[in-house]
Length: 329
Image (tube, rainbow, N blue to C red):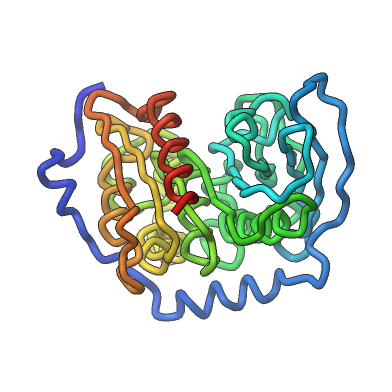
């Protein structure tokens, strides 16, 4: 695909302020307060995966409204010492799949929690196991438009809350160093990791690649690719709903979460990404931690000839090296 967003010389200075609701902080404070439960973990059951070097558990924790959310928790076999933990969030339409699919972080020596995405898992991959019992509000069938017309009804209010609760859950699991927890994700997962960075003040690190829900208004003008294309398609039918939709999306804006973040962060972006335009990632990076002061370890890597796949395995290797250096300091 051709380059279609701003050139890199402009992206590095792209710092738009989000159209932020006056009650953004109150909205999320009340949302997370409503999700708080005395016991975040519901069950932790060992599973047989056929892997000799990895131990895995099927975890259920309480997410938004106390709803049960599933996850795979894995760690290297052969020891019980507390390990740093990586909480990973899946891409759009993907569920947690099967427990042997994502082994990179475990092989690097970390504990790893892969959160299921409520109400997703049917578009690709190997499925999910977490329903979304609150999906009856007006909106389209896809997650990007479920409950789009009201912030309290929107799918991503629930999914972001689940992601925050996943961090609380991993800290309660045995053999986890609760002071060293990182949030990781690509695309939708990158947007969730960025939201967690803005909502969990003591997060140790965030690794964000090709993030969804960053620079949302601009992305809706630039691309028709899903998931943004699902929103524009919905608004093309429900004419006159734009104001309500934009109000809802403003509470999910990744730039707003980025401004409130504290943890050191590692970003990656493909400059030919027509799914999550690179201007959104750069806007979040350039505003990252501006309310608290940017950590000098925060960095971004651009891949000029890559699209939504970004740096792919090259980016993962950079993440591994960066996280090791960050946690060794």
